[in-house]
Image 1 (cartoon, rainbow, N blue to C red):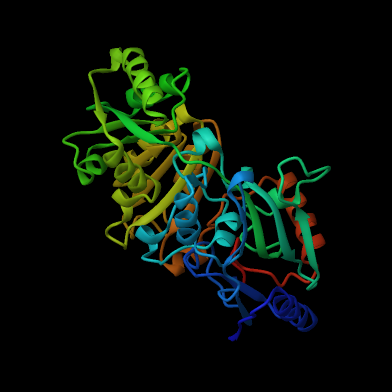
Image 2: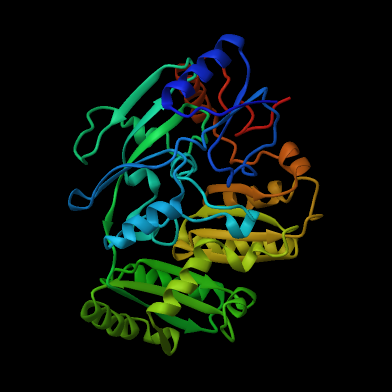
Length: 401
């Protein structure tokens, strides 16, 4: 494999043009933290963007930050924290699941990452303001800008979110940032079964408490974080008087679900970072990990269906709408895909993504949720416009020979 390491966006564009002319498949890597995501494949060339790093523009007063694609998320979060700000979508890290290092801001958008705060703030695509990128012909283009109201027509910046580099090579990104909360607290209910726990989470999300995290940890996951039994967790953030008042109201609202415990700011930060990064399911590393998105009330049913068929461990985020499932490595030849995706259909629909599995399983199993025919046709037309020669991450979203 030929490894190309551009030091400027212009050099990156030249590398893509060369690959397009040779019709040579091209993989795209920033810091490599997400290299194990998707179907395994061998590209003729690798475009290593690690030299395209650094914050290029930051205006705290305007709540805007611009950075090159391979800038580590940790670097950006440290800079923002020093100014009392944050990336509100709370991007998860794959360090626990893959043993990888820091992720990049470009990879964050390409995977459309978000953490527990998605229930309140949305995902990466909801905060990106603009990008600079290179299409599959090697042509540089710019989309969006540095203000919120700058889009007419199709919002290309958001359209690239979740594309895993199959549409364009992003070299620079502009993000909206928001003030960091003064403090945080977590309301914890103990001993609830998943179905009742999700009922409590949904009741909290429907209240005026302005919840910024809603998760349920069954006993195995809860004990790994220091709880004695299952833990149903709700996070509140903001100014101290507001958090205190909302906590008391939420405790009263959820009184029928049992006595509530209050966890302080330090414990809140530790627990929600572990939930964000799926730490309770990370070990042992041989476990297969699925990420399942369904309607919140469907989460417990999907997990129960899987648990009846296979030895499985599950934890719930996004008020029950995000189910992380860990399976034994020898669970089935398709890593449980047929049963899991069947369970999703039976419980109202959604999608299931195979996050962690040996390469042979990821090669034999559709890693991403298969698209309905109409959506697949639309995706193929979009791919043809951005990457007519099919060189960008050709095998990333589906296995190819």
